[in-house]
Image (tube, rainbow, N blue to C red; front, side, top):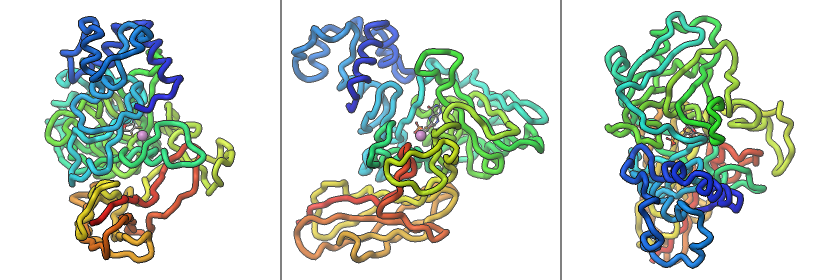
Length: 431
Ligand SMILES: Nc1nc2c(c(=O)[nH]1)N[C@H]1C(S)=C(S)[C@@H](COP(=O)(O)O)O[C@H]1N2
Ligand SMILES: [Mo]
């Protein structure tokens, strides 16, 4: 687990201050109530057994401290093979080769939390408030939504605005996402548009504001970890869902159970989890992570490391054209002939072409590319590759979208490390 020294210390302090609360944080997640009190019952011998060897410096471990190797397993309960980038808040990405499915299983959907998820959520009593500049404010339970609006299921691509941040130089602060803060699961819910229409959008509305039930990292109940929104015109499009099912089941607790917004093609931060309220505003929303440099990029290209005045940052809207190679895995052994495959997407657009190169970009061949299963889903592609002789090759993929925009080989640096859509390269040894 990649925790820097400060982080380690703060986790230790956290456990020293209030081991029971820490225990709950790590083990008491809604999905996994059995583990409550785990640490009180667990001695050194058990911990050693679980990490697989003795713990020579165990005397330095604060009471109630969870070995990182165990935390990885337990905060990721119900997830399969994700890499934990941070444990407070929990942030975890999926290795590209585990994103091979056309529809991302819940167990492989990345997790990006800005705060502390709510506990003990009850889907039966959960309500969503629609207020602000509306004719009739609404308060809806999930059952109300199922009853009053058309329930739809759509495959929708979510990508974190910071996906690929780990490759910026000089490095950008924040979670060092590589490739795997992207997914396309099947979401079931009602259209945001239908709900807003029922409330009656007033003519002065320009932006939505989203609120959820997660707590601020500081523990201050008056602070929100995040509250973002979208322009009202975007909110009224057909493929934004208020979702209560993910891949045919309840949402995973870390992906926003019991209710979340899903906004495909825009930074996934606009898709509020543990959703409790949507306010319609007569100005651009100014909640936490809307202002300053959060989810914003300079309005013009800047050189690496350049200082950019705050007023020159603009809010990120659609995510750029991008593709991922999900087979073979980077570093894999391959036969002389192999299928290569993956996904491609471009926010608010479709992808018209995916090309593959195995000679470091000197020649390219078209991959077979599927249409999206619905508006907002990523597109699957595949190609058969024959390597001319045994040796090391790289499979490169580049997508071109419906506006003719092609994925670049390199992109302009930006201070917060957003929108990295450079081509994906996968090394294989063919024999
Ligand atoms: N309430 C709430 N909603 C949230 C967040 C959060 O921290 N709190 N994180 C956002 C960000 S930055 C991203 S990228 C997506 C990630 O969704 P996921 O964790 O289901 O993959 O959720 C968004 N919605
Ligand atoms: Mo994000």
